[in-house]
Length: 410
Image (cartoon, rainbow, N blue to C red; front, top):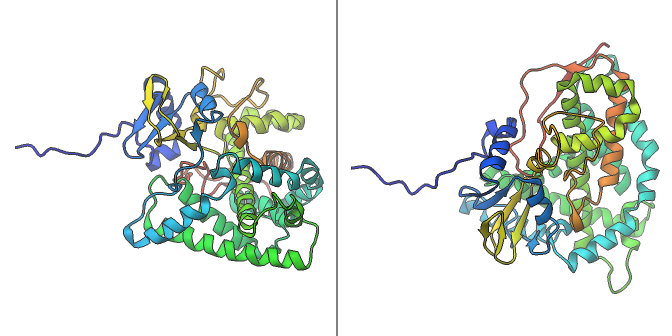
C-alpha cells in the first residue's frame, strides 16, 4: 500500500544554494511558464514579469504592511523574540502605508536632502582612495571586506555622527537584521541573531540621540530632530527607527551594488575595458549594474482585496514576492537582458523600486557606487578575480556575495 504524501509540490526551489548562486535560468522559466506562480513553500505568489511587478509596486491595492509577518520561521522557543522583531519592524517607514508612510517620508526627506548628498562627495572620494591606498602595495584585496563594506559604513557614520570605532558593530547588526527580512523561513539562529542585533541597535541609537539633544553637531540626526512641527514631529521611537532604517539601507544596498557591479565587469571584460577607456560611462554603468545584478532581489506586497494578476486570482491578505531581479531581466522590456551593456539606453530598471516606496537613499547609493567603482577600475588596470568559487547569501531580499577576492599588480 502506497503512503499518501500531503507535502505540497514545489516546482521551483527558490530557497536552495543552487538558486541563489544562479537564479536567472529558473526565473526565465518561471516568467515563460508560470509568471504568476503560487509557491506553496513560501505561501506566497511569485511575480517575474516586468509589467506585472511594475504595476503591483505602484498600486495602492497592494500594501507593504505584511500584517506583522515581516519575518517568519523559527521554533516556539524563539517566538517571543521573532514577535518583538516583527512588531518593531512594522513601525518602519518601508513597512507602512499612507498616511503614516507619507508623514514619515516627508519628515525624512526634509533632512535627507540632495544638498546633503552633494556635500558628501569629497568625503566619499577621500574614503575610497584611503581604502585603496591601504591595499595597493599588497597586490590583493577582498573587495567586500576591504572596500565595499567600509566605504558606505564610513560615509553613513559621518552622516549620522557615529564614531568610527562603532562602525564594525553597526555593520554586524545591520547584516543580521537583513538576514531575517529575506530568509523565507528563518532558522532559530537567524531569529536569535536578528533579535539581539536589533536590541543592541535600538539601545545604541537611543543613547546617540540623547547625546545629540545635549550636544548638537550638525549631522543628519540633528536635522531629523529639527524637522516637522508640533503636529508632525517624530516621536522618540520613530526617530530611533528612522536612524536604524537609514543605516541598514545605506550599508547593505551600497555594499552589494559595488561588489555585484564589479563582479559583472570581471565576467564581461569587454565592458570593463570600455569603462576604463571612457570613465564618463560610469553614470549609465551604475544603472546597468542595478538592472543586471542589483542588490534588491525582491520586495514583498500584501493584497488588501481580491484582485486578478495575469489571470490568477490573488486573494486578500495573500503575500506577493515581486522579484525585481526577474523584472530587470525580462526580454519583453530589455533587449538582450542577459548581456551587460554599460551604455544601455532606455534603462528604466526596477532596482530601486517605484512609486511612493522608491528608495529614499537612491542619490547617495548611486554617488557612492560611481565614485567607488571608477576609483578601483581606473587605479588597478590589471584587476581580476582570484577565485572560481563564489558563495551568494541565502536571501530573497538582498542579492550579495559573502566575499569577492581579487588580485592586481602591487
